[in-house]
Image 1 (spheres, rainbow, N blue to C red):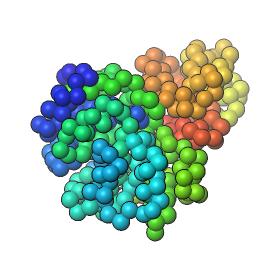
Image 2: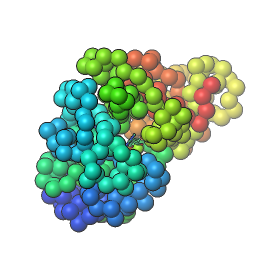
Image 3: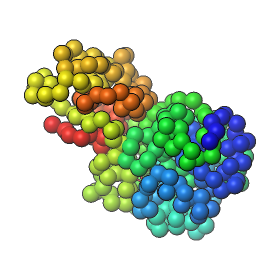
Image 4: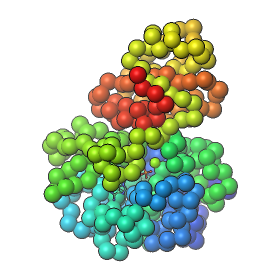
Length: 320
Ligand code: AMP
Ligand code: MG
């Protein structure tokens, strides 16, 4: 296993049909050639990902979109034009040459142009796009540094392309279309406010019961090992709870209480982008200590506060 910023070496391993970890602006990905079934199967195996959970295809430029999909709705073109490269995934009708093992046999494919300079250079140097789900075992917190990937997968990968800390720190926002109209399947690093400024009102359908088509939306996902509790009444929660070694995960304000061992703030300045960037790395750091539990509150439902709240509720052991 090697970690380095050498793009040529990453390209070498990918061309040998190996799985390589790559940096993106959202989270690190486990990447493979979309046209090599054995390599794509290895992604599923390494992550222990159910085969009915399709992968996102990463392409090198917006210009290339038409090669991989058919019938692009006007609103999809607009979104691609405004937000690519960037943390937006579009689900569109797939071209015939996109293999069924990428899409879990669906006739649509999830696709995006990532905004990380190293990964864009890497894609430029390859003759194929990359399938790349997040670089974490299924259902656990996504990696936002090369070290996180190393800690999760150690020798299961030949190579990790180190691109530093992920700028966004949260998965892409996924937008699909029905009759040309947009539907948000997953909240993510591009806020709804940004999307609506470009294409007007969008519907949100982001849980498994509403949208069995997007398996990443199952309610238990992104969970730390330490049980996470979300409460809107901290005082009662702390009074009634018997444990004394508690980590408080706060947005911008610390909490002083005898049962709180340590405070972790997502953004002391109350900035939603910064809070999103810090969410996973903070959860992973808390997990590396021995707290009995984590307690937190929802952020205001503004901007990326919505996406952060979505991840918190999927990470939660209990909400009350
Ligand atoms: P990940 O790469 O782990 O962030 O997960 C990718 C997610 O994209 C999946 O969990 C699905 O929810 C979604 N996705 C991928 N392909 C499709 C598709 N064809 N239709 C709907 N959702 C998709
Ligand atoms: Mg994931």
